[in-house]
Amino acid sequence: MKLALASAPASVESARKQPAIQVSNLSIVFDTRRGQTIAVDRVSFDVAPGEFICIVGPSGCGKSTVLNTIAGLEVPFEGDILVEGSRVYSPRPDVGMVFQQPHLFPWKSVRRNIAHGPRMLGKSRTEANAIADDLIAMVGLKRFADAYPNTLSGGMQQRVAIARALANQPRVLLMDEPFGALDAQTRAVMQDNLLELRDRIKATIVFVTHDIDEAIVLADRVLIMSAGPGRILREVAVKLPRPRSNSVMVEPTYLSLKKDCLDVIRAEGLRAFNQSDAS
Amino acid sequence: MQEGTSARQEIALRTDGRGRRPDSARLRRLNILVGALSLPLFIGLWELVSRSGAVNMVLFPPPTVVAAAVLEWIRSGQFLGDLLASLFRVTTGFIVGGLLGILLGILTGQFPVVSSLLSPLFHILRPIPPIAFVPIVILWFGLSEAGKLFLVVWGVFFTVWLSTHIGVQKVDRGLIRAALMLGTPRRQMLQEIVLLGALPYIVVGLRTAVSISFYTLVAAELAGAFAGIVYRIEIAQQNLQTGQVMGGLAALGLISFAADRLFSALAERTVWWR
Image (cartoon, rainbow over all chains, first blue to last red; front, side, top):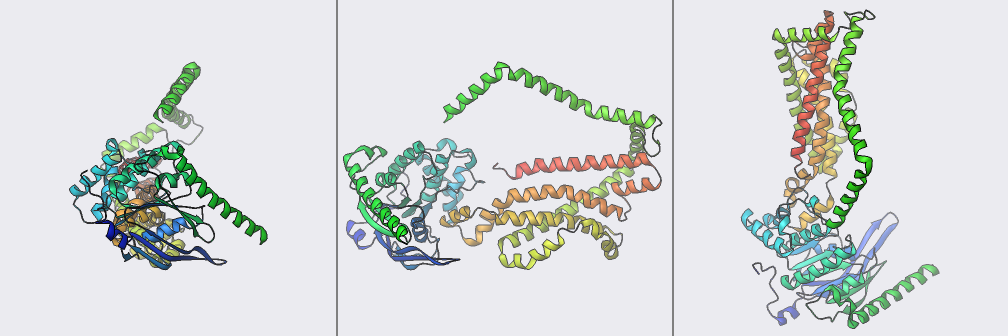
């Protein structure tokens, strides 16, 4: 591999000392016309270096807000967020992000899109293009290096977006429902691609989705969130072997994990339903 | 996915082969024929009506008389002078008004303070037809070239300003967030993202401004000039040279048509990623 995208933790011990991400007592309150809405309520979790966690929850549970806050995009919050040991106030190049929409720069070719980050960090055009070309090969888009985004399919665009986020060699990669807008087949392929990619880049990944299957297939650990206000209901460790692929979905371990998750979600749904009934 | 497309194309071809294609081909050939006949037919009819005696030939001269007037116009050397004078006003006014419009559009689009300061004023001034400014322009500038440029600049500016302003405001916030996450400094956001994001809107504004610059040119030259296509039309009218008037109108039509075509060809290249 030509590219060392993020160095693995120096030792297991130092990894234990400092999580890649520490979220403690994170609360986010939005001002609305009818007063204040608590979007996220005292959420705390740690992510170990190199760990892959998925946050699942219904739409509107604040999972994307949590992710944006870690990215430094959501400004006012209460609590504490440490990434690689330092506080987050604004976007930083060691934290990469992939959004639900690819948000590629339409006026730049695939190569230039991916080279954008390194260019902004002061790399020369030649260096940036070399980084881009390595990543283009990694996501399997060699034939499309000079194509413009509007000529690519949704899945290919999202692959470019992932490559672009990796170009700055982030230690933390945040993914906000990146496959949410894709059809089922493309989605399965993308999940496999990401699993493969992940084994090579060794970055810490926080992946937000509302799809439990996707969460279990991808993650080392799944955080299940509830809506209104957003809280973490349960953490489920996914003890499925790696390297993994989409086909783990038929294994008994997988199915029992999924049942655990569904039970939590069903209980929460019932509670919310009864609450709204009573009020 | 590619297979699906080709299968669909195949079906489309087969249905066409079943009889729709000859029909549509015949229709297309007929359309081309009618299109080719349009102008000659129109000119022939005009010639006939003019010479039939049903209308006054002095006020409604036939195309042959118009053509003779135009030839004389060109031979006398006045045409070149008129053409250059008009083109100078249009292009200079367009460039100055366009640049001002883009500059201020970026400022009001990007900085809310500037927008609060200028937008109310611009929105009041913008709907006033530039022609309405002719009297005051004559007071201010007399019959000088500056007054004519002022009118064209005025007309072009507001169109380009508004479309640039809207373009800057409509730049996809997602692109800006993505750029921020990639380490793009905020002060570089304008050149890296905003300008290019607004470019399609700016180009549309400029293209609309091409025809506006010709409208205002007419007002400017009617207000008093010493050369120019519209000036020549006015002089010919005063001398009852109706052929020359019509020739002038045709020349004006041709020039603004050519300008519009030229600009749309340029515009396509400006937004290169489409």
